[in-house]
Amino acid sequence: MASSDQDHEYGFGTRAVHAGATPDPVTGARATPIHQTTSFVFDSAEHAASLFNLQTFGNVYSRISNPTVAVLEERVASLEGGRAALACATGMAAQMTALLAILKAGDHIVAASTLYGGTVGQLGIGFSRLGIETTFVDPQDPDNFRRAIRPSTRALYGETLGNPLVNVFDIEPVAQIAHEHGLPLVIDNTVASPYLCTPFDFGADIVVHSATKYLGGHGTTMAGVLVESGKFDWAGPLARDKFPEMLEPSRAYHGVKFYETFGDFGYTMKARMEVNRTFGGSLSPLNAWLILQGIETLHLRMQAHCRNALRVAQFLAEHPLVSWVNYPGLDSSPHYALAKKQFRLIDGAPGASGILTFGIKAADPARAGERFIDACEFLSHLANIGDAKTLVIHPASTTHRQLDEAELARAGVRPDMIRLSVGIEDVEDILWDIDQALRRAT
Ligand SMILES: *Cc1c(COP(=O)(O)O)cnc(C)c1O
Image (cartoon, rainbow, N blue to C red; front, side, top):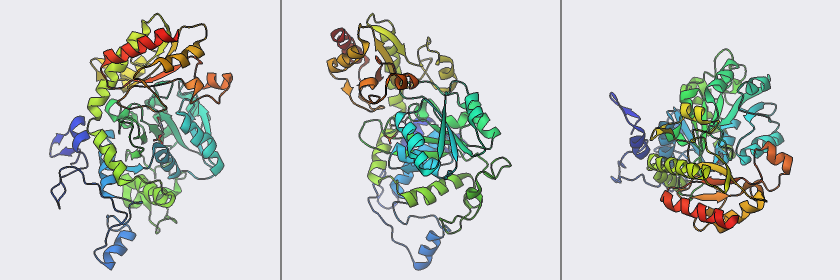
């Protein structure tokens, strides 16, 4: 199914269930079949040659494309309002593929300092080993991005909602700064999901996802997706000298000129053919199918995550054993106004997803944090977010354990910080478990 038919635009829920899929023309199967095959038979020698020359669209080998994976790609592109998408093995692989499609040794990225820790490692350490440098800037002032841009800069990078700070990224002014310099803005939309926010509407050019989180939604499957808006002009006066590989014949792929040949999905084709095909971070058909199952209920789950998280945040804000709460959906949050601008309203409040943080009032708050985690009955202690189940972690003693006090402060991780990924269970039970654990921890 396409995003629109005749004069009718399908709504989000309908696209979450249908986009990219049709009943199987061979068997009539209504569910998307899992095409668990590495390779696809050619009709003839001529057909094979035209596929390899990219003159005919078709499947050759599942590292490059696969029909089950293609349904996921079309579905996420539709939900984001983008032109085309490429699925990858993990969120980390999707980010890497999105950036390596346009960056090479000597190039530079300006990124928010509040990114997911794994991404800080990928850009700051992993990419620096490849000769690609990243400057991390405080995203609260968009002009910090402008000040950090160099002649070698090739992308600006941020997250709709940071993790674990749940700070809201002001996409519009940073996109404007990017475009004034002929650069694309890449946004990681993992924590908001396309149900709550579509970064292309605010000027982003490329969106990346860890589909492992809310898109899959059940903590079962690793996957990532990159999406292209189709609006960035790679041949524009400010961009053309920066991205000659989008315009010139590809050495890595049969001399194809990606932008000239594929136009508004040329970037995705370059990511597919020059990065995924060459570096191999492709998604398996079974995992694509599992993520598709999750996406069918994305709109329903995100409403429940947001409603529950807001209730939990309000409960914690009034709790005598809690010293502070950080949730952008609370009208007392410094991020509330931006949340209202960028996120879908749910029951009149900005849907700010399911992640929140708080601190415990105690003589030794760090120790109380550890005791709180141990005292939880059904909240799961683990390092993930975006599960239907409520998850809890104490970053200072786990994910951020290696950092000293100054580094913790720079990352915005207080020693007493507890991070909750609020699930879709009955909210009364979540509140009960938090309350009894707070009382046992202090
Ligand atoms: C988890 C996560 C990633 C990495 O995704 P994986 O699927 O774990 O590789 C990237 N960005 C954000 C915001 C995440 O939460």
